[in-house]
Length: 102
Image (tube, rainbow, N blue to C red; front, side):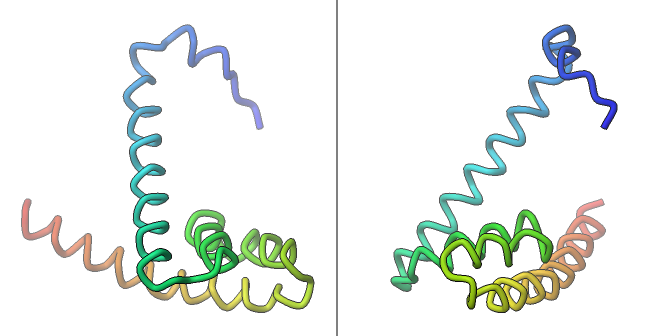
């Protein structure tokens, strides 16, 4: 990657909002995930793999799953594919809501 991280410091006034939005986005993700996991008493395995499936996708969810036990890698793949399927319909729903608001 040809990325200059020092530019973040040089143009802090421009990029601080993007960093703030990212932090808020990740905080909401973590809070919802932990709240639902506590509500349904899900094991930490499903919280960690589900989070990685939502953020990292099919490439990284099996890696996190196999960190718990090597035989759980297929579960990571299934969670990632399920995340893609739900995410596709969720994105379509968000697009329709934005179209209605526009």
